[in-house]
Structure formats: structure tokens, C-alpha cells
Length: 438
Image 1 (spheres, rainbow, N blue to C red):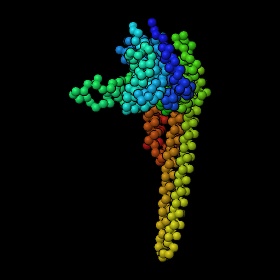
Image 2: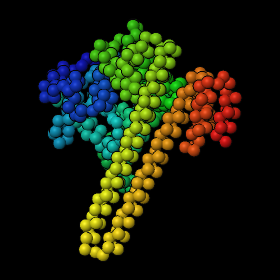
Image 3: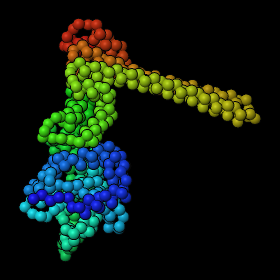
Image 4: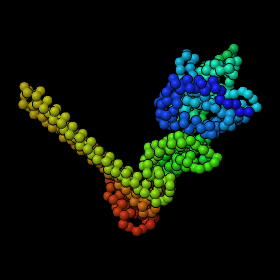
């Protein structure tokens, strides 16, 4: 028979909650503020037993899965509050109790969410294990011996996890006379979301979230752009689906919705109305409208960048002229008592420096302006090509146009005019482009 959550644990949880007021709507979250994906989001989502159990099936080895009773009645959340070996209160991310199959024994699962790899992280997990065992010792059922404790880490950092998984690996190599059992031991299980060989999937909320976090965003690739968006929309559709096999609380649905909207607004730069439209009808017309809006936005950003470059160059020129004038006046003042020849020579040198500085600034200004205009003209050609032939720009066309230099501006204008008014096919266009840039 599956065990029930110990009453003593319920009292301990209530006491810990009184000491640790809720932050960001998540009980007992005083360990760190964290960001949406680091703390609050996962604490709410993984409070759902179904999601938590599905995660354990993805990270724990088969030998442990074979002995753990991973049914809803045998899995219970416990208080995250404990005290470390120095007596200081600490907050674990999540603590679950799981019953073992065919036994009255129980195991504790410590789940920690990480966004960066820390060299001595295994020692932190040893400290967490000690803290939980010390807390459990106050309960009647664990006064003789503590339960099994398994530590699990959910890591979403951009760089690969490099910290040792076992605290034994932090010691120097063993020498004759020292056995592993002579030292502190402790190991945790790791799911490195972005770097482990894990294919994702669409069968559960846990799998969909991992699939989305592994997705690589390539805004310049139209197909990848909408595939990336689709991975997040699939999550929303999953939690909102009316299916008797899965039910999610309003709190989880709202948190998942907020998380998806933040990701798509930040990375894909979609508006809230565009996200809602794509959820209702992922049609070609909506996609085309989003692409046109983003292309216009990028064009506007390029134009603003060009203006900033020109303004910066003009300001630099004015500063250079002012500095030269200042040097000129200083030279005149210093030459007050000198011979007229020395005075004239100083003036001539100052004038020469002024001309040289102005010439350099003008040269840099012209170069930056030409490069900015060149980039805008190339982007315009690519946009015209997509509108003209209704597909992405082939690699050959991109290479042909991208190799153009400022001196090729007249040729690029001719190519742009060709796409705007000529009726030839792609092969004829390529011949014209290559001939123009030859």
C-alpha cells in the first residue's frame, strides 16, 4: 500500500513556511531571487506530480527506476526548509519523498535547478543530503536510520556542465592505503538539458519544455524561425488541451503561458497579439504578415544605425576640429615671446595637423557611411529576391551579392532595379548579377 505524507512533515512544512515567507508567489523561495526559468517557473511546474515523475524517468538510471514506486499516491512533496551542518537555515529547490516497491522503505529526492556549473557543486549536494537527514531524524520513523537520499540536478546553462558528479572526484587520486570508503562520498544525477544526448519529445509537459530549451533560434532562416516558435506554441496547446489523461492546475497553466510569452517576445520579438493569432491559426497569411513586419523593423533599425554612425562621425569631426583649434591657441600663447619665424612655423604645423585630422575624420566618415549603405542595399536585394521568386535566397546568390564592395555600389543598384522591374527567371538574374559584379 502506498504511504501517506507523514503528519510530522506537514507540521514541519507549516513551521518552515512561517519562517520563510513566500516570494514571487512560490512558497518558501528565499534561497535566491532567480529568473523565470531558474526558480519560480520550475518550482510551480514541477510541483505537479505527473511532471515531476516524468522528469525522474528521464534522468534516473534504470536500476533506480526499477525499485522506485513512481505512482502519484507514492510520491509526496516535503518541506524545502532544513538546516545545514553549521546550523544555518537553508532552502532546497524541491524535496520529494518516494516509496520503494515491495517495501516500507522510502527514498528522498533532492531536486536542484542550476544555470551555471560550479566547481565544488558536489559538496553542496553533500551538505543538502546531511541537512535533510538531520531534519528527518526528528521524525519517529527515521530515528534509527535515515531514508535513502538521491540528488538530482536540472541544468539549463549555455555552457556544458563541467563540475564533478561525485564528491570523490574532488579529492587527489587515491594512493595505496586509502580506500574510497575512507573519504566522504556523495554523488548526484545530472540532466544537462542543452548538451546531453536527449532527443526531446512531445509526449509530456516535461519533454516539451526540454525540447523548447534545446531549440536553437536562427532568425535569418525562415523555416527554423517558425519551427522555433512552434516548439513553444506546442507547450501552450498541450497544457490547455482538454484531455482526460492530463490535467494541469490554473496556476501551472498561467505560469507556462507567461513563460512562453516571455521567451517568444524576447527571442523571436513577437507581439502578444501575434502569438495569440498563431495559436488560433498558423496560416501562411499570418506568417507572411509577421515576416514582413520583422523585415520592415530590421530595415528601420538599419536606417537608424546608419544615422547614428553618421551622427557619431560628425561629432567626432567636430571634436577633432575643436581639439586642433585648442592646440593652435595654446601654441600661439606659448610662442608669445619667440621669434616671428618660430611663431609662423608653429601656426603652420597646427594648420597641417588640423587638415590631416579633418581629412582622416572625413575618410572614416565616408567609409562608415558606404559600409552602412552597402549593407542596406544588400538586404534590400535579398528581400526583393524573396518577394520576386517566393523562396529563401539561395546560397549562390548570397555569396555573389555578399562579396560586393563599396566600389560595386552602382552594380548593386543595377541588380536591385533588375529585380524591381525585369521579368526574367532566376537563371537569367544570376547571369545578370555575375556580369554586373564581374
